[in-house]
Length: 231
Ligand SMILES: [Zn+2]
Ligand SMILES: [Zn+2]
Image (cartoon, rainbow, N blue to C red; front, side, top):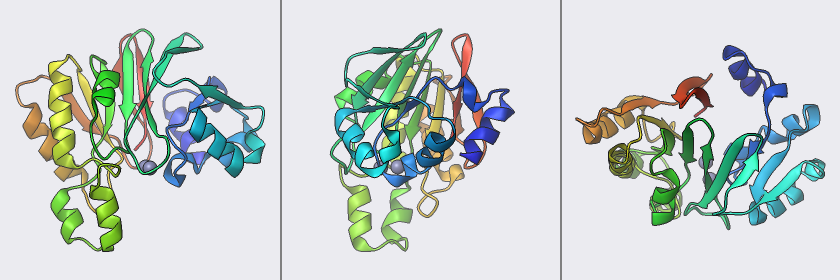
């Protein structure tokens, strides 16, 4: 929560400006700050049905703050249209989000494979944040136990740099101008490797590419406003 607070402060915002928190799935790296956010700010939390029921079980204090959202249909959050779309991951339900206001921002991480549903969710967005989780060689020859390597490499695991590069190229062709790489593995990737792999695929496209920082925030233009991203 402190990281979120200090990152927002860098862009002149506070937690009071937050209209809602969108949850992709209930894995701990995505909800570890939620307990403290609920304790101090009680923001409205949006999640698809299966994720919401897991959150109820894990965080009883979420009662009264949780809104179940449809997947595949847009809903209104303030002045923004938000649409969740499914991602293939090793949990019962996991989603990415497309947010439309003055511009379009879309996010998809935690996916072993890029499905048509993911492409449809991301296509045509001005700015996207997509998973660039691991360098396949670093993962294969790295220190992780075999079962974990298999899980990450499976179609319900995480996206490799090479697969991310392919996705980035097709998004750049559909008009996306800013591509942010996120959810990089600390053990099986480096920002330099991720950027090099994806940059190669984007040559000549004119799309801007960057990595979400491990700490702090990154403000990128989305239409008339800006989006703030974390790793
Ligand atoms: Zn996950
Ligand atoms: Zn994750």
